Image (cartoon, rainbow, N blue to C red):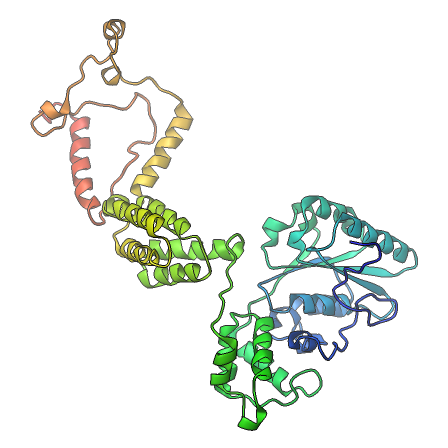
Length: 457
């Protein structure tokens, strides 16, 4: 970037305060920009933060603005709220500098800090708004840390990603985190009607059918910016002489929705978590819904197939031994045929596993056994189980006393096979779900025989 080129997000609107005011956007700006709230009272959907008596509003009204991070999904007003918060300081007391972490670099951070130090000497505070703060790497965040800590500047960050993962701990500990909520359909409808009716910034009294408003709001997935963008497109194609903007016009111009789903971001982890937990809860309707949501969002079908294979062993296990081969068959089928047909075996495996009896007893048994191994180390293996590969080994007793189970009448011998002193047994405790109930009966009979080998003969 050339020297002197601005990275600021907002134009200069107040002398001496860079990008401060929530003033009038250019007439050719997108509708969403023109309709940005100009005061906290115009903010919709975040009453838990900015309503009278709410925590963020109380901080603003008290004039004690801390460094803070605004966290929430796209299109709900984080940038606008950050600007309103930052410019709420009394006129002349604060400078507002805004950058996007997508474009700003370490040099820009140092420039902001240098300007903040000069302003501080004149008694003026600096509020530094950093949009998409999660895009800053550790070095860039480290460069901000001492100046936030010293009060050289007040940091206001905005992020769509969980700050616990994306903002370094020392910086996060010096910021208040405020979580913004996704907007509901009714709240987006309020914004759409406001934009349609506003004669100054909006569409100047556009008449619009209720069904069209609802369709736009529902298609926005909680994103006000998307909703206003779709309204602007539909309004541009509408002939007012034909009457109110109709649902048919909206459908013809806007088309189908695009789901909000980032394959490598928090939405990904939240959705796959909901998918697995719905499978585990034996809820095939919810499980296939989340499957469809991920597929529609562009998720890798083999990733989903792998999760089903793991689930079949971890959560269905011996309660339905057919679950694992079916899940593996689904994986192999998807691998061979791909999409779109691969969606069908994924749905097949999903609904089967969700409807199957559940047991995690094999997984629990492995964890218990692993804990015992870590606690006791490599205990000596009983001699009768050792491999007598040489004459020396045989002379040392390797394999001595081993009885071949298939030679027994019921293919079972009651010999002890664990090393002496292994703690925490039994590791595997079969449940009573599905096919595992039969396993439980057999295992109980065999364990009783091992406890009393004489009585089993």
